[in-house]
Image (tube, rainbow, N blue to C red):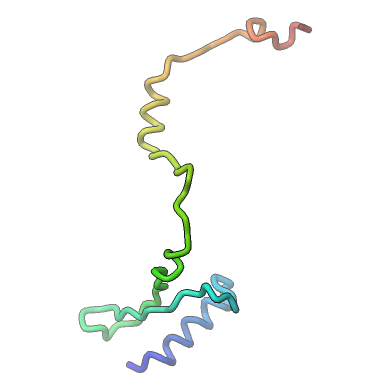
Amino acid sequence: MLLKPEIARQIQELLDLEFIRPSTSEMASPIVCVLKGRHGENAVRLCCDYRYINKFTRGDTYSTPDITDVIHRVGEAEPSIYRAGMLGVGTGS
């Protein structure tokens, strides 16, 4: 299998679908071709090698909490039910 025509076809398809766009950034990532199938005869998968860009990025200062922990915390919380009058809503105060 010739890789160059297949890579060009896949890149053009991604451009046409607007999944990617041309860039002149010096922070571009190289493409790595991975052969799919038992011996690579089925197709080529394009993958981005982000190792270079990862050298320049910072991790999240405030990372997103694990959704399982959030669900457990909400499930263990004491229910708080107030009438509108107790909150001063609609009482003119």
